[in-house]
Image (cartoon, rainbow, N blue to C red; front, top):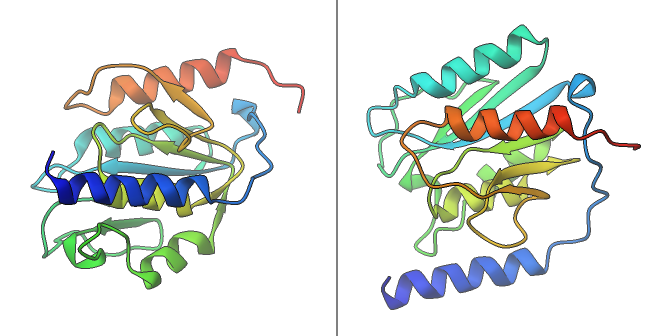
Length: 176
């Protein structure tokens, strides 16, 4: 990791620590209605595993929004009300998302954010941090980003991480 990447990560961690304290509530899976899936996209933007995850959630009558990121300037995926693909033009040199993108992300409130990011991807971490949600879950990459972290190795397929998160959300009963 070069010095610029270390500086970017330090800035992100500093901003994460400065976030206001949220009213976090562990969700009961059957009461979750709105879900934001945050994921790192493949270069071709096909993301068949993410589409399958979205389909599974929709079969459970959950409203699903997708937010992906691809390390490319020209993004091919259209911006839809429930789906958005971010690219390098949506961030600055410090990997912070543009103000318009952050405003769009913060516009909606979700019951649950599921961060399927497999590696350190600061634009997506900024997106997950900016999302308004009662609960955030994902793979442990950065301390304090999620309310519930899963420890597992990075994989090409997002499905195993999703399955683990859902398993624990269904298993753990909350009194909230």
